[in-house]
Image (cartoon, rainbow, N blue to C red; front, side, top):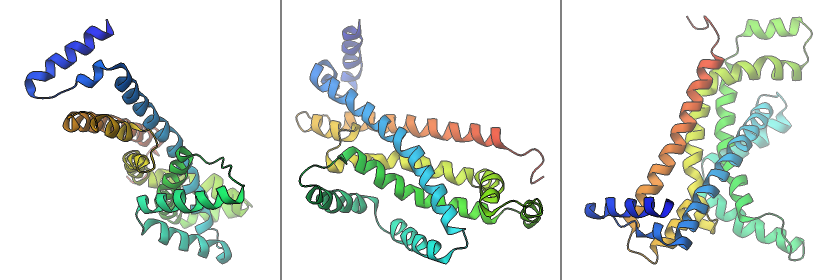
Length: 245
């Protein structure tokens, strides 16, 4: 049944000049399917990790403590002003080597983990800036009301500022997450077996670069559409009735 469907797929696109015969090779088909799964796993890990980093960095930037805010601001400037690929190479080729030497040869941080850490931190910085703007947009009277109820600084941040800041910053956060999904493709630079890397391995042996690139574009298009749709659903779900009207 599945083999017949794959043969029909190949036959359908052949008159159009597209060679999808790799799907008839069990090994190459399994490799491509594995790449699709790894890309999905990267998204599943980096999205929540980047949001967590964003909240923590934003909290530090707006904490009012110079000893915490200034180093974080420097980190934000360096991170957002340098290419993600360069950051990944620095982490994997330099920090990874230092950790390996320090541990005497063993290293628990895998290439997959390095991609998650670097991409999540990079986009976490952009999340933090969006959340910082949202936190600073909370009306002063709201803050005064919270202080009048004897809320501590931590309670004000968690129970007042962040819930409102999330609503203010949600469009920017969703835009960042869409960009994050596309950014996971850099995993192929350090031989993590995502869909881009597996496709490169396949087209190295076959003359079907265009065909695989079309599949990659469609796959990332689907993933980013799902993230955007989820963001629009959240915007409607978290909308404050009457606010801004």
